[in-house]
Image (cartoon, rainbow, N blue to C red; front, top):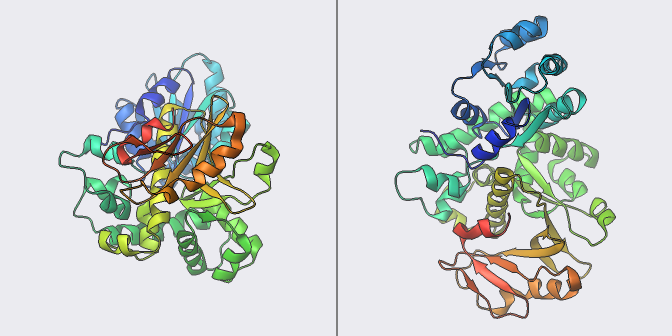
Amino acid sequence: MWFQRAINPYLHELSAHFPAVVVTGARQTGKTALLRQAFPEAEFVSLDVPSVAESADLDPSALLASAGDRVLHLDEVQYAPGLFRHLKVAIERDRHRMGRYVMTGSQKFQLVSGVADSLAGRCAVLELGPLSSAELRGTLQEATPPLADRIVRGGFPELWRDRTLNHRAFFSSYLATYLERDVRSLARVGQLRDFERFLRALAVRTGGLLNLSDLGRHVGIAATTARDWLSIVETSGVAVLVEPWFGNVGKRLIKAPKVYLRDTGLACFLLAIDTPEQLVRSPQLGALFETWVLAQLHCRIASTGSAAKLYFYRDAHGTEVDFAFERGGRVHLVEVKWAEDVRAPRFVSAIEKVAATLGPLDGEQHWLVCRTPTPHPLRTQANVRAIGEWDLDALVV
């Protein structure tokens, strides 16, 4: 089963304007499948195989010439970091031939560093996350499973390609592979069991403010170690930080961000939430729904090449709105609630308070993401529209 990824048209657009394209993202998000579907005639070389990675280091010119006039697809290119400088030389021989090299990698820091050092202006970088619900609905022949089922199972394509695959078995294997392959290669982590506890502590905090000292105490490590480990989790595409919005841009760099796991299925696994019934009874329900909404918005932004950047809002009085983004010089607010009926004033009180303080920056349109079956405006002082899970494309363009 091929999943139709929303990022595919943008991938083709970039390959028509850059000699090389790199697709990054966490393991098992479907990077290799995406490029094989988009470039079916490409010469495929997996650098995940140690002997192939070694040959790339010993004779990079032969490897880069192996495709002839075809596109060369280099899979898990981070295992041959020295290849980037040879790619630069090969590209410069025919600078205006576009789409010659397409690459994937699961360790974003190494890839982006290689691109910045050797391929600046010659290579586009895309990030592929787990499947969004819209992508899932566009591929499945049967009815799309209920929202709670999708949150618990998550967005890794293999779990939806084979619906009989036990998701706990999948995530147990995924976690073991992630710890052994990515964590060991990115940093010296003495006890992988401590790092697994660190991941579980992050799952408890998904959608919450990041406090490295508290996180370190929870796991039994120093705050500086927690910071280093968080960098590993970000680099490997497992977690993401959302910065706070302030009118003063400089303040965004000194206030605590919020931390999210990128996949709700992995978060549920780490929280021992196995079924939709357990999810709806869990005190983590609201945070996991917020995490799911963030994943959908990230997919939309990545697939369109949008310049939109997501923030959250929190003031000194504790008033908080889940997400905020700038568009056309205005700030738009997004609150996330699991409820289906959101007519009560309490659901939009935070948006109203914040919108009233924005003045000329007020985006004049704000959203409450909930489980309503039909989008509709809410009777509030601010212009707030309630939307359901299938209407999120209206938020980011």
